[in-house]
Image (cartoon, rainbow, N blue to C red; front, side, top):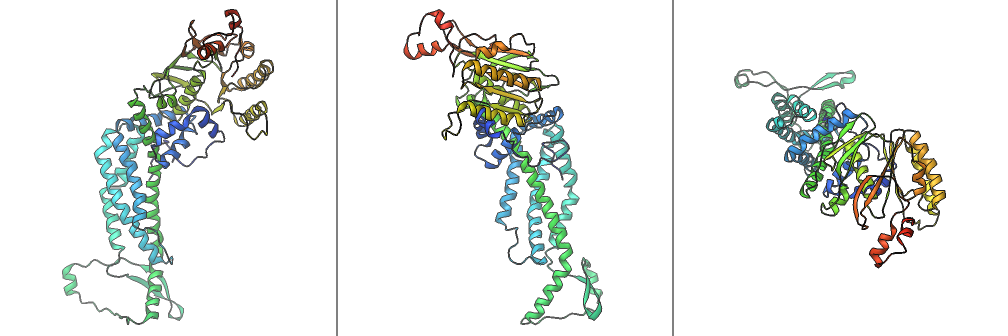
Length: 505
């Protein structure tokens, strides 16, 4: 039985976490998102990381998962109950001692497999009841096929047969074997056969002669010989029953793995809903175009109780976005919000916006400023270039690279020249770049390029930051004097000098 709630045509097997995962988590503030998705469940936490950090790159796969998630959000309790059932299967395994300790004899293995089937049978019956009672509430292709499969595979006839088989495997009337006599009168071709079910009148009138032998209770050697005969007879059926138990247990493990992602998405959705943060299911664009309305930074919203400023962008088919403007104007927050939205979109989730549309990316990479290397093995400039080298080794055409103050550790002339060459080469290779920078010299180098969009953090004439990012060419200042005034109550110099001041962070 296949679950097929994550992919249309394959199981959701374990995927390795990409090499750049730690940078993505730290730079985009994903740890807060994961915390609200897992709500203390370590298993859900691991699944959440695995899904978000391995983005889908197929439009149909994204749409398939989105439709399933929409169903899950409409029926959260049913989805959570399915997940709880899979946990109960694991707990039941521990409590009822399904495992076999001591000698791995066929009799012991068969006994353990039978107990496993007996316990799993109750969960199969529960799963069938959930399917019968709830299937009409789900309309996505994934959930519809899942419940159809449950009804088909777990039919009443099948469940009765399993129940009957489990009862017979208890061998309450002993084990009936068929044995051939070989050379030296040794037994061969041991076969377990099904006892004939005689009716009451057959038991009375059919007086067939039976030869029997009763073993002396003190005959240890005889008892050992009988055990050996029993083990030979049941060895073949033991493997069959053990495989059946493993198959059913494996199904519940797959169900837990796939349903965990939807429980995580429900958890995060409810946290956002409680804070009044709008969410939408993004549209995947076939072309290289991006547009959104009131896009917010999820991590910041969850941390600040929903008090965040959203940003909007009209549809643009650009390959390079250069974001400049006032210090502490919301540029990094904007960069994070876009990175988070892309990862969630390509996980098949919703995004925190009123509208969001984007093309799919082959991968998402980040290069944000780091603190000084305490080990002093390399300077900041060398460390920045070293990290960029690692990114270049991994990145592919069609990927998204988010740069935050890249090469701000050196002087503007040298930093602008090196950054220009690197970014230009990446864009020409098919990489989409979104770059937050204070280097006006760098921004000027891209003036006139058709595939570049300039965005700028808004600042009122009074120096107030609105935390809005809007279209606008860069200015030769980051208005560092505004921060100086806020802290010390007076300016650095004249207004003309202020316009020429470039602040680097």
